Image 1: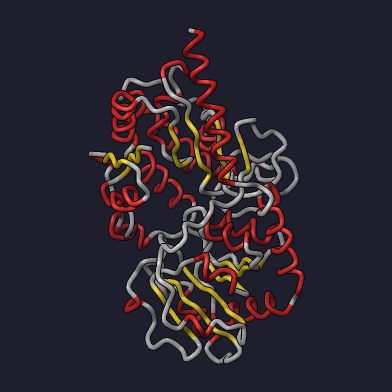
Image 2 (image 1 turned 135 degrees about the horizontal axis):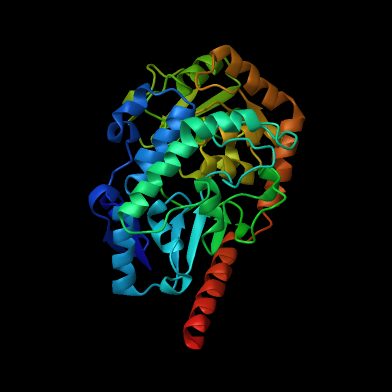
Length: 403
């Protein structure tokens, strides 16, 4: 296996036994501290402007250098299959070119399913399902302010590199153009789509890699004597702990029957509010395979993969986040009845306290989360990945032999 990635991830890739090959140029960007990489992110408000910023600066700008890295790897290693994140746009030149000129490409849906909806709801606004064409006016506004300008921008990059134009919405293209799309969820945690292409495979949550962090010294306190509330802002939108972690600590500090566990998402614990309440414990990272089975409520800004891991363990949620894809992830939490979405980036302590108590005390939330856990347990994610990989690789070999 070859891991083509940014230099910042070399150690992690080599640790799993893969050969590391670095990107160069604009494609080699360290996003472990997102606000440091893009300082303007700190002052941007959630909404259409932020969506366009992400699309153009984060995903499109590296496209050509990403493509050059992928093409070089193809020439040097002749891979059987290429696996990418579903918004890794560096494979667009390959996907828009002749099928015979490339290996099979598998995209992994590490965010909610980006395919269009019959109610015309635009992405990233957190709009719940509605009747057909209900959101046409909103969609037209988003198209004018974001999607059409982005379409022109990405086509300028493609044609400037000598590649064909993209003729469809980017969110449809990244689902329809690859040979397979592996969605890291289950159907009942996704809004209904009557026209999904056959490329889409729901494969459940990715298995947790064990022992990625040490078990904390205070581990014996999670002995079942108190309800455990886990709160984190993930690893991306965690530059300002006053948004969610701080209010959650304030909301629950006078509840000795609760143990509040704070995950700093890789940041220093010195950046957390001081002092921590008596009923709070913290670590930069946790081994999720150890922690999640002990959690009663998960308070999160809505990182897709962590939400799916929580649901795989039957944990109900309280969500509050509007940046990146989080409004849409959190809308799915509420729609699936597995938790409460506070629909804000900066919830009050009062709203959080009420939501946590509701999720703890009203069985319907845990019941819905438990039903989703049953569905998450059905697919053997590892075997599904291998099966799809093998099928595409065999098809590609057969195609070569028949040429």
